Amino acid sequence: MLAGCFSGYAQAQNPAKVTGPGTIKWADKGATYILISIGDKLPRLFVNNKEIPQAQLDSYSKVIEKLQQQLWGQEKQEAPAKDSENQQCLNNIAGEIVSEKIIASAGSLLSFRLDAHSFMVNGKQQPFTIYTRFKNKFITSGDRVYQFNN
Image (cartoon, rainbow, N blue to C red; front, side, top):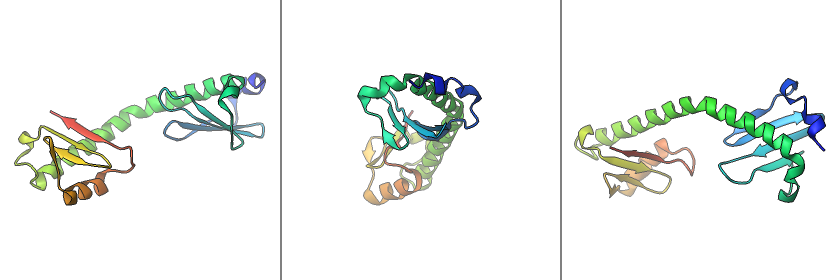
């Protein structure tokens, strides 16, 4: 059904654009496609802001496959920068743990875990005030987790 309209995808004047984690948007011939593909979950496809039922996704398999390939390629390109950014945040958190005297020295830091619900350092739950300060500074979304194990 859509194979013909999608065959010129590589040369499309309106290239697909990654709009968020696991999400890509593409407009062609008056239709707007939004694909949400996260992990091993079944992808969700929206055409002109209407979600396509799971039973009809096979009709859009070529669109889904091409958009997934581009989405995964973009995420793969961005991975080194995200890894570097994550490592910098881990270092910043470790530095603040030491500067706030939660532990005596950087050498005594064995582990920490900071997420939207708790803050543990060396297996010890941190007081609410410390947790809140670190959460407000480093946690940018509800699913963000920083974990370090020495």
